[in-house]
Image (tube, rainbow, N blue to C red; front, top):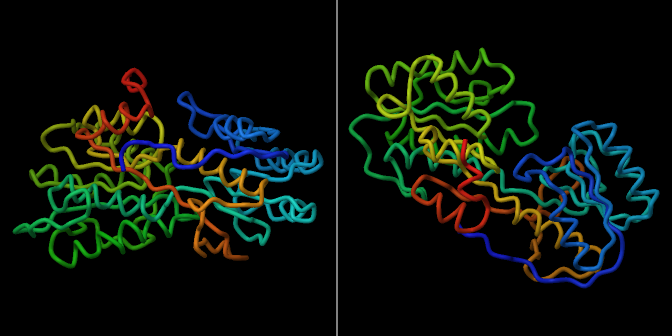
Length: 351
């Protein structure tokens, strides 16, 4: 893993696919439906693509219009993953297959497939990379020699009301850091990371500031500190708070790890603000989603998309699920992983 390679076969299909994306793509194409639409068009499908501008009502109206237009497959990146039951029930009544994209749609029996990143593995990788940066493990998760004294780590697990909060908390804490605590490699200076204590509201700058202030005495005393953040947005807030408090990368700077796609986290790694980011390469997600939609149109799934009974329970049914694996990116492998694979160019990380 580390270089992107085409994974899925070509298709020859007919039929119509509706793609409803939650928001318009950013400057480097995150959340873009164009690559999915381009592949499906190349394979013979008619495609209707719409962006909902983060407005749940707009998305529902777009999906309704696609149903009325007679699409055979709907691919939906939900704005509100708990609010689509009614419109997807209408789709099911019209014998339209539904693929949840990027975010699982909850509380509906009318989702035929889910394609997303492996959020649990993302969290495991965040914790693993944090330990690696502290010299307590390698990037494959193999423990290093237990140090004379445990090393401090603080966990920022994201908003508690996020549908995937449990994946993040369990992946970081229960799967990795709890074992590192048990064998004496880490401790938690602000207290054990319970779900309530680890939850992080990105919009509550005061909460992040308080939590940073609680652990910076480690830096003041010259001791190492790890910051495990479930995404790059939270990592960036932590970094900004550290800089406001007078800390600069170099001496007395923590090992910060985040996760996500796009340029911001990669810039932070290249600058040295972050030790690592867990890269979510949307190209693999785009291609997998297109392949699933094409398979639903053709009625035949290639062996590479056989989920072998695996799925996510959305509180209404077990949804067949295909997960795309993340990649740990540090300064050591950034050039090969990011530039060598064509994900971004060096110029994309300027600024």
